[in-house]
Length: 433
Ligand SMILES: *Cc1c(COP(=O)(O)O)cnc(C)c1O
Image (cartoon, rainbow, N blue to C red; front, side):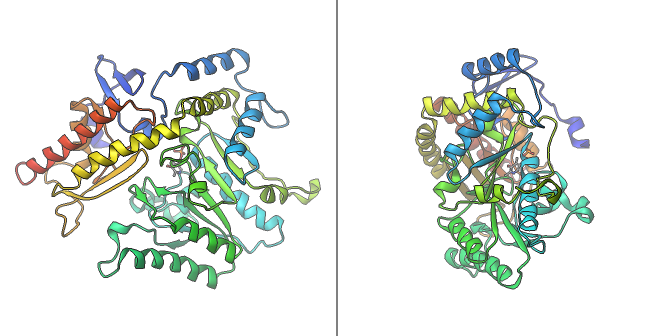
C-alpha cells in the first residue's frame, strides 16, 4: 500500500471498445479485460441499451418470496448451455458463488443423511475468491497467510503445474502423480464432501493450463469414490479458454458449477451457482426438516444484472463470439512462439484468450525473475502504461487477458507491447535495474 502512494495511478473516466481513457484524455488498451471480466470492450451499444431499458422498468425487487422476469429468463438460458445443470442460484460476485457452492455441497450430504461428509479436497495454486470459505479452499500462500487461523482445513493436492514439476519426473508421470495424490486421499477418507477446482485452468495461481484429460480423470475419481465435483468457471467459463462452458470441453460434468466475471460482459456484479437436479432435490422437505439452503443476499437475482447478462448471452450467439475467439487464439499463439526464445522467458502458457508468460532469471535455473531496484510487476505496469496498454501481471508472470472481442489490431498492439517490455527488461537486467 505504501508503494502505491508513489505510483502514478491513472484515473479512468470513460472507455470505449478495448480502450480506457483517463482523466487527462490518454488512452490505454485494456490488457486485463478490467480484471478478466470484460467481453466486448466497453460501452457496447446493445448491452448498454438493455441496461437502460431495465433501469427504467425495474431496478431491484427481491427473490425472497418473489421472482422477476430477467432472473427467470437468464436462469433458463444458463441451464440450456450448461449441460447437466438444471437449477440456478444467484449471488453478486464470484466469491459468494463459491461460498454458495460449498454450503450446497455440505448441506447436500447432511440432507442425504451423511453429515460426516464435511471436508473438501482442493488444489494447490487454486484461487476461488477472497471471502473466508473461498480462501480456505484457495491456496495462494502470501495472500492468505494472515487469515490462516480462521480458515478451515482442507485436503490439498498438487495441481498439474508442468513447468514447476520435480526435475526427475516426465510430464506424464507428474500428471499421474497429481491424479494419484487425489485418489490416495479419497481412498483413505470417506469424509470428502466435494472436490473443488477451477475448470480448465488455474488463472490467479499463474495461468496454469490443465493438460488434456486431467480434469476428466478427476471427474472419474469423484464418481468412483462417491464425492461431489464443484467446478469454478468464474474466470474460465464464457469463452476465456475458447469454450462457452469449459467442463463440456473437458468432458467432466460437475455436480455444482460457479460462473461470474464475464457473465454480464463485465458491466455489473452478478454471479451464479448452478447445480444438477439431484443436488436440488436433496433440499426439498417438510418445513421443520430444515432442508432448505440457508443462503440469500439482498441483491440476489438483481434484474439489471440479469438483463445485462441476457443481452450479453444473446450477443455471444449473434456475433458467433466463440468461433472468433478460436481465430484470435491462433494469432496469439503465433506471436507467443516468437516470445518463447527470449532468455528471460521460462514458460509460455496459452489457451483461448489467456496467455501467461513466466519470466525467469535464466531458462536453466527457472528461478523467478527478480530485479535489483524494482518489483517486476510494478515495472511491467508502469512500462505498459507508458506504451498505451494496461497490463497487470501476477508477480513474475506476465498475463495477457484481453476482452474476448478485442479487434485484431488491438491484439497486435497488446502482443507488440508485451514483446517490447520483455526486450526492455532483458536489456536493462544487470544494468541499473
Ligand atoms: C475472480 C475469481 C473468483 C472470485 O470472484 P470475485 O467476483 O472476485 O469475488 C473466484 N474464482 C476464480 C477462479 C476467479 O478467477
